[in-house]
Image (cartoon, rainbow, N blue to C red; front, side, top):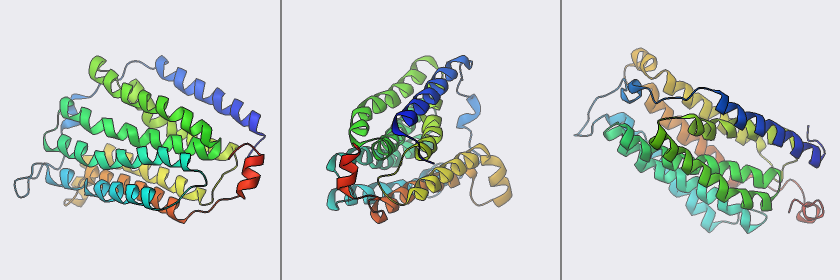
Length: 260
């Protein structure tokens, strides 16, 4: 359902302003004191909260594999399209250590190091989608501000206790990326993989919200551990997409349309 380019940009800008402005009409969101109380606190081989710690191994695998492919294979029409995905998979890799550190000893102090690398993942992915759907130049220009905004949202939470900017950093790409996919023509095939990855992340957040209920039903694994596995799987789906996709148009046609 792609529309004329200028109209698409106006729609995207209007929706973005509504979402970004609307978050500040919401009362400040405080970190619940109960957030650090996870249902599965079992220790194994001296590792506290063992499954919540060890389930981060998926991020390690996907982060290393993603960076290896990005530096060893030519996966893009233009080299500048690579940078947002380097940021994405660096964020995935660093989440291994930040999330493991947090779950080893849950507190607001350690949660900072869990959330920080995740913002690199969110903003790298969003920048990559901007580069594909709008233009590589737009993706390059927006990437640094996006990363700064993501990092600032975590610092702002630590300073003020208000989660609103961080919630926006997480939720805005979930809404804006499908909108961009509807409004703008793709540079590459396999756009469905992006929607699948987003759906997996939504499922991961659902499991996080029902951590105790899932653990009470399954008894061997909690919702939060499953969240880690689903989020890592979402990252793997994006890596598989990069490896398998093909340009949807010839480079010459993309250059003529201003999208190369």
